[in-house]
Amino acid sequence: MSNTLIDQKEKRKIGILVVGLRGANGVTMCCGMIANRRGLEWRGPRGEHASANYNGCITQLKQRGVHGGVGFADVVPEGMLANVNDAAIGGWDVRPGGMGDALLEAQILDYDLVRQVKDEMNKSIQVKRGYYDARFIGRSQHEGATHILDDCSSTGEALERIRADIREFKTSNNVIGHTTVIWSASVEPNCELVYELNSSEELLRSIDMSEEERGSPLSPSLIYATAAILEGCSFVNGGSQNTLCGGLEELAMKNSCYCLGTDFKAGQTKFKTAAVEYLRTMGLTPKVIASSNHLGNNDMKNLATADKARNAKLRVKHDIFAAWEEDIDHKVAVMYTPMINDEKRDFVEYTSLGFMDQHHTMVTYTRASDSVLCVPLMIDSAVWCDFFRRCNQAYESVSRSLAYLFKVPEGGAKGVDPGFFRQMEELKGEVNGIAQALKSRSLTLSEESKPSSFSRVTAEKKNVQSAGSFTLGDTAIVCAGLACVDMQLVNATGGDGGESIDTFEGETSIGGGR
Ligand SMILES: NC(=O)c1ccc[n+]([C@@H]2O[C@H](COP(=O)([O-])OP(=O)(O)OC[C@H]3O[C@@H](n4cnc5c(N)ncnc54)[C@H](O)[C@@H]3O)[C@@H](O)[C@H]2O)c1
Image: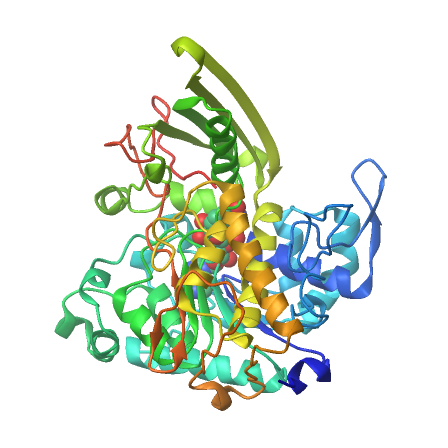
């Protein structure tokens, strides 16, 4: 079967829209993409030489070494995984000001790099006004939230404004490919109403109602997510709130786009899933994971000033290790430490039972910028959404393949092995299967250079390894992940078997593992 779409090798300009664009993640991502485009070099804090790269972004890196094992960029035919240097970037924030100024204020990346991109970021990246509801954000963020859609009198109106922003973004940037909207805004308290929105009709009806009619507020993240899906964009929930609901998933199915989450698994949590897998693979029985982390960025500040009563009530506990059935006592303690800003430290002690029930104890210490850990997941999630969408991949297989990005694999990924390497194997199996099918020209690609051209997808898949498909008519969709793992546990003191956070004695800040 011929496949002219592969032969064309056109430059694919995917779209990445970030909610919370002026935040630590947003500015770090934009700076990295500009630096890569321009091939920038700079001096680090001690004068050492540094240069732009996509380390950590497995969709952008090629395989390396005799046995490969690094990136995916050359596993599939050239151009199939979009080059993010060509991507269009945009988004919303409730805080006013230029992107370059926000980058400088964030104090995350080396100053010698920041000074080279600051003006370009201020001039070239437009930040749209955000949809804001003070009930869904920590008190510390209220005063600065002035760049908002304050002329919207209803959620229905806000939805239409965000949809118009998305359309304008795609057209003015001449996006060729899929657009993904990523929630990288402040963590919200969970939205009570979400549990009642089980169909797309209920969701849309609820957005159309006044607050008096519906009886309680809808979270901004739900409005952004709905707008994204109605515009044919995928939505990725990088925060820990309960945005993904049945209604949103059904809407994603109807609009042939993906809806993934929840909560990026960027650092501590990801390493835990690798370390525990290692212990189990050795034949040991992990029993206790006692961890602490401290961090002082704005995300933590927001969490530290969130409405504790509400958060405490709405907290979600979820055991990421439940599938292993080993009854692991897993606790996380968190401290808000403004002095170290985005430079997070985490300590984790693992105690396992070895031969003759003797204790085996191991400690890990990680120190890394939170945003530098998270941005590659944002980039990769957008590139994967475009890739899988283009290859018409089905719900279950893609949900399982992308489980490695999120703290809790739910939706089609439910029951996936929690181990990091097992999750990467799922991804490899899927991508290798697609690579083979593309080589033998037995996979039909879909094109979506124009939003209107991909309302339905034909899930034609031959020779493609797939764990199964979840289709609605001829539509292939992906929906992965729901619950938050270890965030928003204000004043929590242990859990009921699930992963939970203990705060230190007298410490009132909150947050969660990454
Ligand atoms: N960095 C990590 O390692 C990591 C890992 C997992 C999850 N996350 C999540 O990613 C998100 C972003 O993290 P960050 O460090 O960039 O936070 P941040 O506080 O630096 O940035 C959040 C931005 O969102 C904006 N914002 C808040 N509400 C908004 C709204 N309704 N509309 C538009 N903009 C809004 C804020 O003004 C702020 O600029 C958080 O939810 C965080 O929990 C981060």
